[in-house]
Length: 400
Image 1 (cartoon, helix red, strand yellow):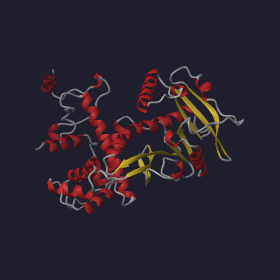
Image 2 (image 1 turned 45 degrees about the vertical axis):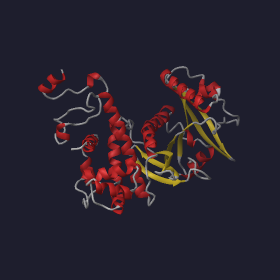
Image 3 (image 1 turned 90 degrees about the vertical axis):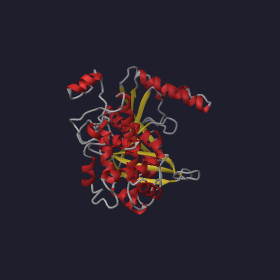
Image 4 (image 1 turned 135 degrees about the vertical axis):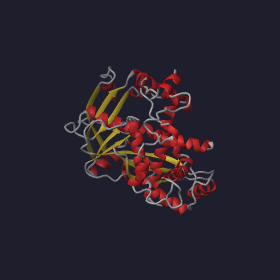
């Protein structure tokens, strides 16, 4: 067994325990046809989405290494069929990180909207902007669009998102524009969006501009929440809403100030004094009435979206290596799930590597005897007292 095969065995050990069963159940693999096993199918797909190889190059590499003997068309079809499989693997790994919906079943259809820039491989590779929407908490991609990075109608904007009455859209400050918010409200949807103070002015019922700093100074305790009725104006349209604000902890404030300092050093300019004041708070604007959702619940919804955004940050770094299949929406969504799967596997591998030594994974032969000659890989315990014990006396003696 060479080093690459050993690494693959370890990587497979990171997957949810029913990953093979899910491949059959989702219809991703009805027949192998050119592949020796489910391992080979998944390995070829991750070779494409994780390493950034084109479908044709992936097929050549798979044949040269004896992994499979298939064409690039066959690989594309496999990618399309694997959409539900890859999605379920992402759901399983995301649940292991502790990102779970803690409240009752959401009465609305929750959708997390985001966008990122990707680059095709090579010196002449094209730049694209990827726009997508994920249903929460099931992590299902229900919107996917690819645009250029420059020109009209290419920026992150609510205006391109098709919505239905009753949708609740969660988004970061890149989508904090009055025109986009107004467009979604016209479609019957509501929003929870992080406030960008530079581009989204808020007004009182009287028509005067809302002064943020006096409101924020009322929050002197970490975790305290306040809300303020506000109006969002776009042309002749006035939309009622609420500003929900939470003060960060001192540790979170210090981290935000360090980020601002690094930004100042990088751009060689001084941030505004009020920007440092705003960095001490989480400010979210919503069009939902208070009778439907309290300020704390609004912030909890945004917090859930932000937990997933932390995973997406890894995804965005990996996207730069990818070769996006632009043939159809299905293969593009499957490619997106594959990228997210690589990000989640990377996150889990790093977490295990930091918590277990010296070999980087936990021995748990009783739980999964079929994996890696008795080696099973499990999430790292949260505390030293929760750390699992080796299941045999010989193992305990060896550890001592």
